[in-house]
Length: 175
Image (cartoon, rainbow, N blue to C red; front, top):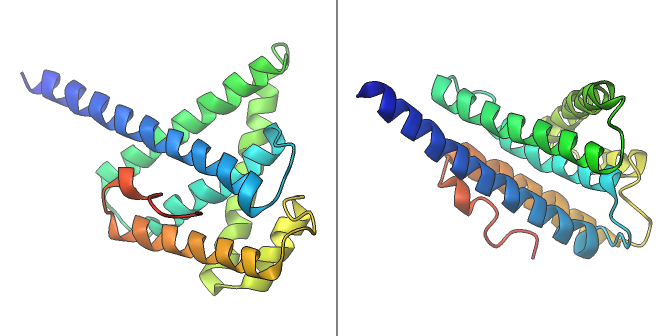
């Protein structure tokens, strides 16, 4: 009886976090086109933006010691890994798939450390440099839009810290 409850709860959490990941992907497309003014959004661009959004969620919950929350974040990370795997398969990298997934996960964790330093200091200038470094700032973006994007990411971090309903994390952001 308890086992069925745990399995049911796990399935509900998985569905909830899959919906959150869909929100992340939808926001990624919107951010790429409307905020960062990127015309051709490819896998690398999507990876970079998803990394920033996932970072915001994980960074906000870093100090929380709740094991259940860590398990839920692991669900989100597993979905992200599956998405990388699926996207690389679609691009035809079946033979070296494992190596490429590992490469992108290493890139992800490296970028997390960079973003952590930026957002811990709330350093807008370093954030713009970060965007330049990873080809997300194509110089067509004015300072107002970049600052708005940075502020929206800060709001996402605040929402994640308050642990409001995760389905509402992206409501009204990046518009």
